Length: 199
Image 1: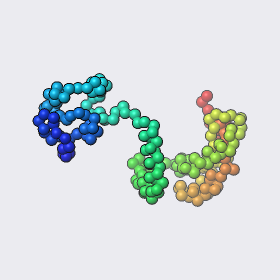
Image 2: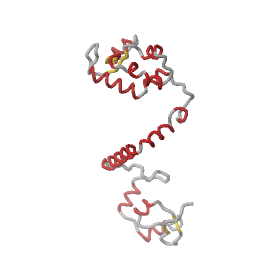
Image 3: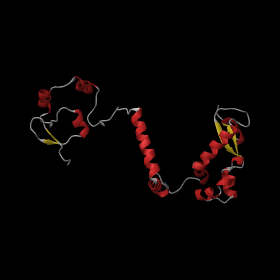
Image 4: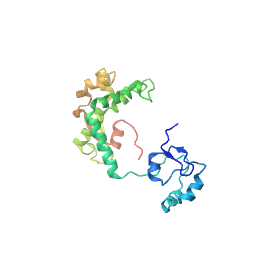
């Protein structure tokens, strides 16, 4: 049971209320004295508007509340500052949710190829290839651009005997070499792999 922090307006019974509720309300009342306390204290126009908004019992008391942009920016800045000054906590936090410790771990069923494509290094390689070319190298299109390995990732995995992500990082200069990438639009990329693009 929570420690009481206020009392009923009429019967003086000790009660617990959220600090935010205490700051917002003009009085506190127990369930037995609620209707009588409301008659004694009266009700304001703001409270009537609040009742009309239709909040149901059991809902989060912050439902429908929108944070101001300044508040969001302050929170984001505080978070960036905290993690920049505590890099060891960031590493520790990441280690808790990776591999077997992740709540969606299913015994490592992901294929290596798909796993490598989700790596940060692969994302940076894709962005760098598209930034270098700026358009599809086949048709010149500027829409739906994708990065394509000239020498396929599966071939590189087999050639370099890559077994896991750490092996891939050791061969990062080969696996994510910019010279091994070109920019293609989605239709040209599908054509390159012999797949049919649904227009």
